[in-house]
Length: 110
Image 1 (spheres, helix red, strand yellow):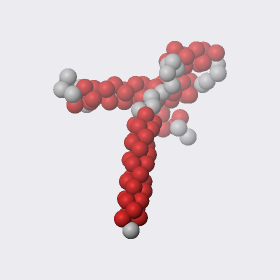
Image 2 (cartoon, rainbow, N blue to C red):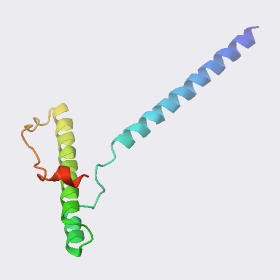
Image 3 (tube, one colour):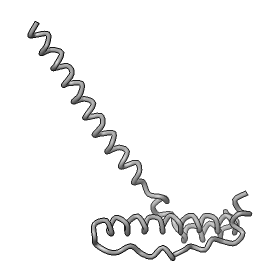
Image 4 (spheres, rainbow, N blue to C red):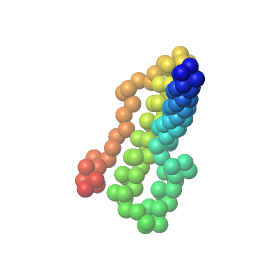
């Protein structure tokens, strides 16, 4: 009877250990997935200008993509500044920095 009790305890502890390992690796995976960059590395305004110059994208597409790249850059800078502020390295930039979107952006999204 005593051996059966130890077997049950051992299996329970082994199961808890496996669950802890799965949770640990799940958190690692989730953190790496969330930290993916907003825009592809190496694709920037110069490549967009080249596509527009070649006629591969229209002026409206260029404006929309440019706004997306600028917004992604500002989001990345804001996250980095917030992380530094949490560590006490520097104060947060003011929130009055705004990106002006093209006035006809709502027409371009149709």
